[in-house]
Image 1 (cartoon, rainbow, N blue to C red):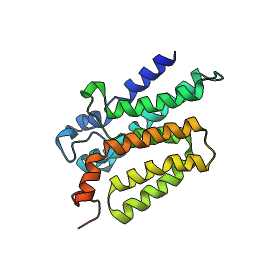
Image 2 (cartoon, rainbow, N blue to C red):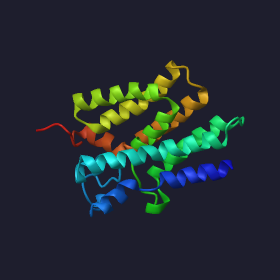
Image 3 (cartoon, rainbow, N blue to C red):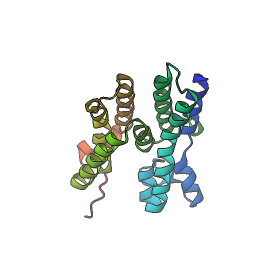
Image 4 (cartoon, rainbow, N blue to C red):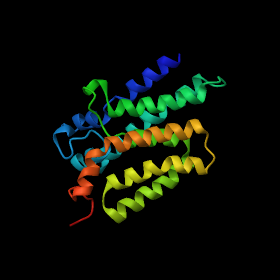
Length: 197
């Protein structure tokens, strides 16, 4: 059962909703903007409406497998470990989707779904950090990096279990790794900004 849940979480996470939404709109988002299949590039390429739809679908990819696993594994000793594993598997699926030759998104929205399951209160803290960082810096990537990095800290301060904190730290690390190009552009002053010039 546990293996089925983990594999199923990966396969759900690997569904490229950004690409699907773009195809519905008649555009391959991999050929535009940052060429990423995530909500940010969809929003830049097709508009906020399509970006929001992609965001919601990608968030659900992280939340749904964890919720389902928690129901199926209720009262079993290893439930929390497997549920957290399902969340990580969904994020890995989004980042490295088997359907697209393992070239996927950066995991922020799917990671948000995982974090939402782990602690809605901690999400509120990180959302505040995200919004403040984006408004001040003008870079969505800065907000994403700071919000994800601080999430394990919020969990620790809120008394989260070591398993939950470790799962959040793994996802935050994966998000930073997938943002390596954004980090390089930020350091070189080449990152795209949302601020009007």
